[in-house]
Image 1 (tube, helix red, strand yellow):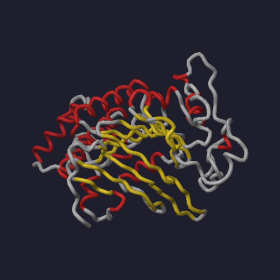
Image 2 (tube, one colour):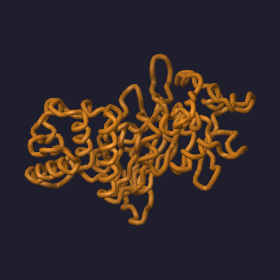
Image 3 (cartoon, helix red, strand yellow):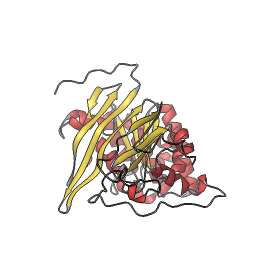
Image 4 (spheres, helix red, strand yellow):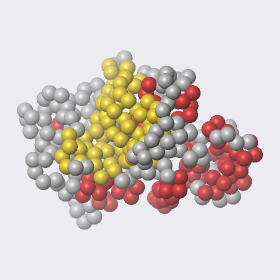
Length: 345
């Protein structure tokens, strides 16, 4: 393959995903977990990818680092990282033995996994695991790697960092383990950080601390963040832009304040009406029905069986609607969007 070309310093985009498709080939049929999504992330920006469980958020996340295991595989699309350090790299086109793929994983792009106990090795100390990441991606001695690891543990709020360095994951609390995972993700100063439900298993107090920590370290390092979550309260606190996902496709995207205040897609409107923190004093609504199986995706708009605004003959046939621009910075995949003023959340 041709060598990577250095990216222009003024390039505003760090990640460009185009028509990404990740399918799982099972005995029962093909599951189109990610079915043609496109988005970009700007430098220093936080993009939140939201939706119900099973909508394809985590599959998207794993696809970006080529971590999809069989029977799944990426069947189409581009994932272009515009790295200031390594040039333009189409991650989707790299072979498994390509050295650039190893440089991307954990170096240029890091990930905070959803469950820290699954992300950490139970038979190695947390310090050794952080030090290994440093030695893999940075040209430093073992002594320097030790010092860098201890310093990063301190910076993520791990008390007694020198002592914790030699402890195993099971000796730490859930909050401490998550801080270790964050330290491991940020120690090589990535250009893009993927955070997959980083606070799911934590109590409310620790959640707030972890989110604040990620924002602080993001400002310090200058990295972009892709935040995977189902919690729109977290989105309101953390993100600059939000993309809403349903059944493997994006249905709405735009600046977070605009989307949360005036959602255009009926699915986004339903999600917002079901969140207690955003509906104080109002009766909570629920989205009728259930998410269809990926083996039986409805024709037309995939959301139409659950949509209170669906029109027979318009929404229930043909191919799914494509994302289209409604306003300067708003895109939505709904044939009815734009007919009426945006519905308030």
